[in-house]
Length: 122
Image (tube, rainbow, N blue to C red; front, side, top):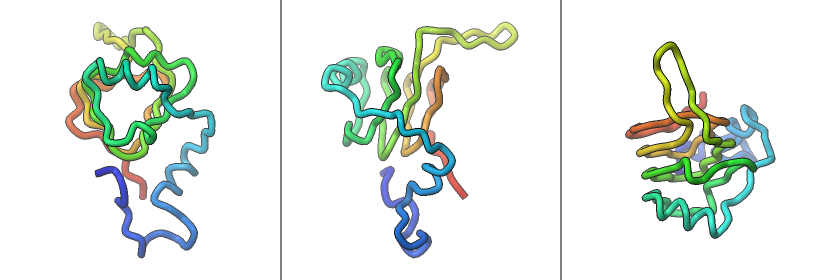
C-alpha cells in the first residue's frame, strides 16, 4: 500500500507517481527521520513498513505523533506544541490514531482518528 498507485501507462515518459505532488509542493527542506526519532515514534505506538519513506521538516516535535500507521512516501511539516481553535473548539496540534498513505501534511495541523488519509492528484 502507498506505492504504484498510478499505473505506468498513465505516467508521462520519465516521470514517477510523485511528479504531480512534487509540482504542487516543491519544497526540498524535508529530511529523513533520525534513529532517535524513529525510536520515539515506535514507543508512541506508530508503525511503518519503511521509515526511510517518512520525511519531516526541522522544528517537528515528534512526540506529537501517536498511534499512526504510515505507508508510502509521507512528508510531514513542522509540528509544535500548540492548540488550534475555532469558536469554542480547541484541540492540540499533532497526528493521533490515523492511517496515512502517501501524502504531504502541512505545518501545525491536527489529524485525529482518521481511518484513511490519502491525497489524490488529478
